Image 1 (cartoon, rainbow, N blue to C red):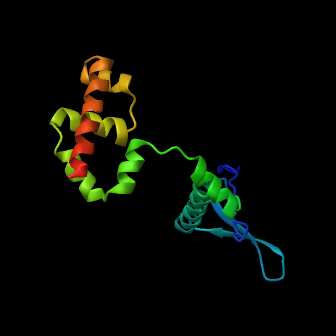
Image 2 (cartoon, rainbow, N blue to C red; image 1 turned 60 degrees about the vertical axis):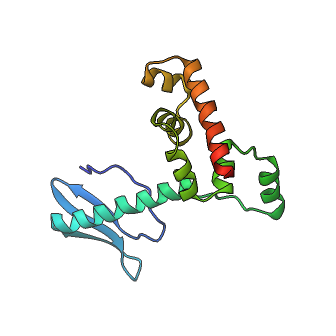
Image 3 (cartoon, rainbow, N blue to C red; image 1 turned 120 degrees about the horizontal axis):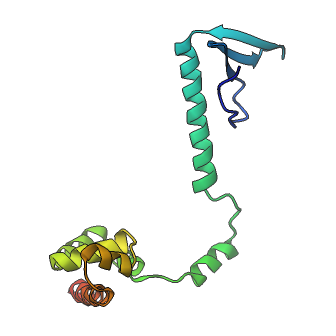
Length: 156
């Protein structure tokens, strides 16, 4: 019996691997398009198996993380014109990463920790309040004060 799940793979990969009764096989078509089956040792089979898993990982990454639609000048313009920029995007765009980190490090330890959780870890105020064992309003006030301090220090 074949113990491997059916996997999708690159169209360029001519090999298929199978296990039958604890024996390992590689199936392919030769140069004359004749189907062939070759029994291989487990270590060779494992190499082919890892190759398939790596292919699958790349295919999944391509599907999930690479944009596949064609971009025109108009669509790029519309994205930029319709985007809403948050405070963290504005600050990062206006300053270098080092400057930003220096200014954040000038905050009090409590404000620094809360700003990092809110903007960098993307936690909501209620979650931060639960972690800090304080009220939602206190976290909100602390982050607003930290933003004022950041703006003031960035203008210097």
